[in-house]
Image (cartoon, rainbow, N blue to C red; front, side, top):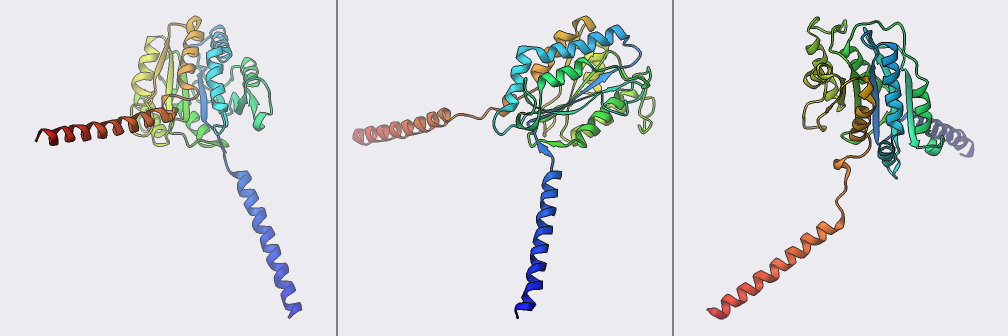
Length: 297
């Protein structure tokens, strides 16, 4: 009997060990839950010269250094929120095949390694050193940038359970004049952008826009920014008059789109207590009125 049990016990222990190993592997493969995923999608087409691209990049750098933006981002570090996941991509005639800045898990303002993540200052340094990606052409394929951004969010190592937690930030100085090869309505630049917008809506991804000039903002508003729908809040478009004005515009935009919003506010106990007190007072008042009526009768 003893000799029969030993192999069984050994087999059971081995099976348990395999199960633990598989479970551990599954846990390691599980996505990192964060408060917000943010993808910055930058137009690098030929209509933006190198001096303008520098103003463009420097505008983002200064915006992330702004005290109000940093305060908003710091709100994502609160217990249970686990920070911000952020990446940057560039596009023109097509989307660049690699991200300009790969996904970073921001869990602190100044110190790397907090909660296993990266500091905001490290991301700003990477942004400040970001080069314009060559070989992506001179045309403006906005739906190329949209598809690349949607794919990047859908395939990264992060997840969020927050309804408004997946955000794409599209910035451009023009309107679409080139389409994805896969777009069924080639030449209809607005419709190709709308197709990608619908794909984002289906995935609960919000798209916001920043247009440099009124024409670009009009195209983004009509065809790119998320419309009001039942699953997420609507997207919005910020306008910059020119690249000299870009820093102020992107700062305002980041304050609006990064970190917690009104939908994340948890009602405190005072309104509930106030309602209970009012309900109790109304019952007392009804009793007094009923008693007075009885005496009068």
